[in-house]
Image 1 (tube, rainbow, N blue to C red):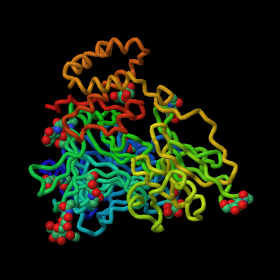
Image 2 (cartoon, rainbow, N blue to C red):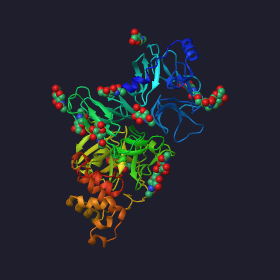
Image 3 (cartoon, rainbow, N blue to C red):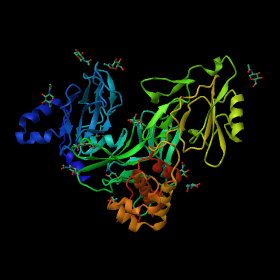
Image 4 (tube, rainbow, N blue to C red):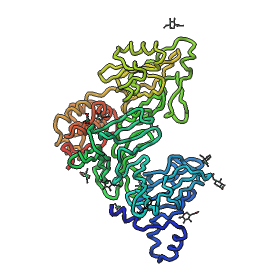
Length: 528
Ligand SMILES: *[C@@H]1O[C@H](CO)[C@@H](O)[C@H](O)[C@H]1NC(C)=O
Ligand SMILES: *[C@@H]1O[C@H](CO)[C@@H](O)[C@H](O)[C@H]1NC(C)=O
Ligand SMILES: *[C@@H]1O[C@H](CO)[C@@H](O)[C@H](O)[C@H]1NC(C)=O
Ligand SMILES: *[C@@H]1O[C@H](CO)[C@@H](O)[C@H](O)[C@H]1NC(C)=O
Ligand SMILES: *[C@@H]1O[C@H](CO)[C@@H](O)[C@H](O)[C@H]1NC(C)=O
Ligand SMILES: *[C@@H]1O[C@H](CO)[C@@H](O)[C@H](O)[C@H]1NC(C)=O
Ligand SMILES: *[C@@H]1O[C@H](CO)[C@@H](O)[C@H](O)[C@H]1NC(C)=O
Ligand SMILES: *[C@@H]1O[C@H](CO)[C@@H](O)[C@H](O)[C@H]1NC(C)=O
Ligand SMILES: *[C@@H]1O[C@H](CO)[C@@H](O)[C@H](O)[C@H]1NC(C)=O
Ligand SMILES: *[C@@H]1O[C@H](CO)[C@@H](O)[C@H](O)[C@H]1NC(C)=O
Ligand SMILES: *[C@@H]1O[C@H](CO)[C@@H](O)[C@H](O)[C@H]1NC(C)=O
Ligand SMILES: *[C@@H]1O[C@H](CO)[C@@H](O)[C@H](O)[C@H]1NC(C)=O
């Protein structure tokens, strides 16, 4: 706090003539300090991206940055960027042309003007006695009346949380239709479309007084509250275990609806994923748009349509979803059902708890799940869960998003006009190895790995002598060393002392398949 208040020590008088006067009177050595203080009336232009408002030691700066990937003609966002060029905050989300400008208006308002001079975004701080603006070395842009902060970018986050930024229940990270928030009971959630669907929730579920979420500079993300003894509950931590210096770690809600922690070495412009909320991207609600089906091509999530009875809404962007080539109202013959094996139509709260029409959820057999939807005019599709409950969900035509993988046991049905035109079959690709047949030796390694306790094994693994671990009887079969390494890494995850760190079975399968990236596991005994 002392560092931060130092940056706003220099107060600027509001009247322009006073500023001009002080410019004339100040000795030249003070100019360096003045450049760190943003003068009322100062303007940044998108046409000149070398123009910046910097923090005292240049760790952060406010500037126009071109959109990435680039567009023609180029478009820009007014952003606070970390040294190297990584944006951590933006004024508005609309990309603007090169005639756009960003101004600290003498009334104390921050204004973003588009190419024709219309206000696109403003801080709403006109005439609140704002006398200074400054960007501090933690990345916080502060507007203050004297030394009293009135507005700050930390209190108005966009999609990123920085260390030393306090995230409260009043704040939201947003990206497109996705949002991230903290709740009064200490849960953190990811939601889709104005909070209608909660597709990720991790939490304490405790009665708290005024929880805040904070990120340590070493990448530990914790919920703090006066009722939590001693100092907070860890929700996630950076996979690089806080190693290295001059590294910024930050949390960002990405455009694909996933929440990730990144690290970036000062000045590099590179960012490395250190933690991800949803390891399985296909489980992010709406990732493939309405009627879109998410599949893995081995390594990457790919969006497609349920069958050739559908086409992409936008052939250039498969994430925009699919539409029927013929609407079911217009079917010349009776409507029929497209049967999709190994396919789950994503169902998250409140969908899974409250039925839209009071009759959405049924415990029925698999054939009834199909037939009841077929004869029900309000049902567009149905899915039977693979979680052991045998629950059948009827889907109304509002928004349906699916996930197809050989590892899923769900079956789904979608109404189409006959004839059913299945997708050409490249087969159900599952993992780099192609087919869905996890070889017995992979399972054996995991089982042996877990059973041994693995301190010895770990020593060998760290030295890279993987073949020594593989049992000779197994080596007789064809052994893919990449899969062996994967299997051993997975087994380390399975024997974590902290139960929260152990992956769920479904994730284990996907790590083995190579669908989910395997973070390098911490030592099973926990980190020292
Ligand atoms: C761009 O801004 C920089 C820094 O303020 C300045 O030195 C340079 O002259 C400007 N260039 C143009 C073309 O205005
Ligand atoms: C910016 O304004 C100038 C002068 O009005 C105009 O010639 C130019 O086309 C504008 N640039 C864009 C990208 O609209
Ligand atoms: C600026 O915003 C106004 C109002 O939204 C809009 O009518 C105008 O077309 C925009 N100009 C540019 C160059 O985008
Ligand atoms: C600015 O701060 C001064 C002294 O701290 C206070 O008297 C004044 O009311 C404030 N101005 C506004 C507009 O809040
Ligand atoms: C810049 O200031 C911040 C905050 O005091 C500090 O953490 C960081 O190490 C400084 N960086 C450099 C390069 O001086
Ligand atoms: C965040 O909260 C801590 C503890 O309440 C406080 O010391 C710190 O000043 C706050 N940071 C900001 C940027 O408000
Ligand atoms: C908070 O999270 C816990 C554990 O994930 C969950 O059981 C609980 O239902 C959540 N509470 C609310 C109110 O969403
Ligand atoms: C929170 O407090 C309320 C009322 O005091 C109580 O009904 C509720 O069960 C509590 N919830 C939890 C999760 O402890
Ligand atoms: C990160 O820092 C916090 C507070 O300084 C500390 O409690 C925690 O153990 C550290 N975590 C790691 C992984 O170093
Ligand atoms: C950024 O990352 C790429 C690929 O990991 C690497 O080749 C490049 O050297 C890195 N750049 C810097 C400046 O570290
Ligand atoms: C999967 O898709 C990604 C992105 O479209 C592509 O780069 C990659 O080569 C594909 N992999 C395979 C095995 O087809
Ligand atoms: C359409 O379905 C209804 C009831 O399922 C059946 O009675 C009727 O014969 C069917 N019509 C055609 C043309 O298949």
